[in-house]
Length: 105
Image (cartoon, one colour):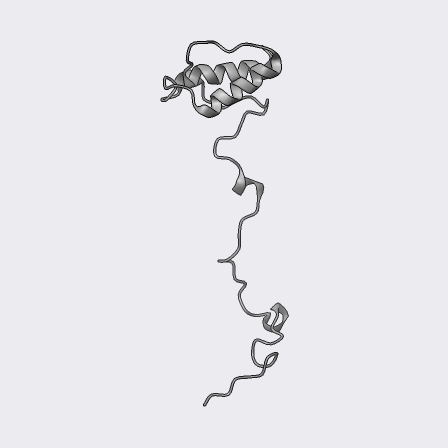
């Protein structure tokens, strides 16, 4: 039967980096926490505007606006005392209207 060291005894007990100064540092388990590693792939412009790509150039710009766009437009319009167009909007049209309501233009 093999002998097992008592808790707190044996090779691993009390091991620290100072116990083996010649061992190579492990880097395979490190996580990159730099800001660049967590930056969005397509950041917003410095002026705080909307997406960089023009909504007229979106491949899905002609599709009906999303529920999230509709909800946000309703919130913005209500806050500013404005009425939304009665006609259904496309994603691109909704995006432009959101930008307009956000900037007050």
